[in-house]
Length: 340
Image (cartoon, rainbow, N blue to C red; front, side):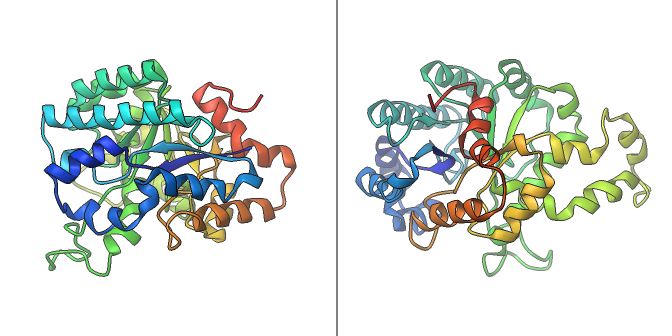
């Protein structure tokens, strides 16, 4: 079986509400409405049917934009419930296509989102999804400690999705990022920065049972093995106004160990074989799960699935290891059997 552990879908009732309230919100307007497979169930099922011979199914999660970008307070919670209830209903009706779902959370309402995560888990969610920042702010502040503590206690898998907009400029002299560099290069930076903040805030030490899943095969992290390894072994030598040497020495592990062994990662590399090989070489085999990032490809659903499967099937590895990546590692992560 090939169990695609990170794909995106927008439930119908949530989309209806968005159409009324958010209108042509820039983040879902041009991008999301141009990809029918992300909201049209019949189109999405045809995408999945295209890979019937691969024994293929999808785990679904919400996409973009973060709810807190267009809602506040109780409104955020209302939208989260629309998403999570929609996923629960859809997966109950279409088990063969969608054998599992990921609950949407928002750290903008940390206390309420804990309760919503607990409710969603009782409904069958396999874990929760958050973003790499909260309204462009860091995720390691004291207001989020209760969330991390509870997720650690529940041993709840946390899918971490990068987010960044054109307001993150490429140069400080400019007003916005150009040429969509905020996405191409900014999102991978977001993923690495998220994990770094979790490490240096000591959240990884305080909450050792956190199950973080980094999207896009850890993004830039495998390519920066030397920097997060021997480079960060020298953390503090480049900075005089902060005592980063003391911080480094106070961590329970070598910094590289957190980056390399502290999370799970997925195989969504946009059809890039080099990135796939780098990720497979860098991360422990048991921490790698199959995912395609469907349906955000030029074919609007099929290309990333096809290319990810092709690359994985062409790589020389024992059949057992390939099957680990396709479904067994995921089963161990979420504590549920999908293949009998």
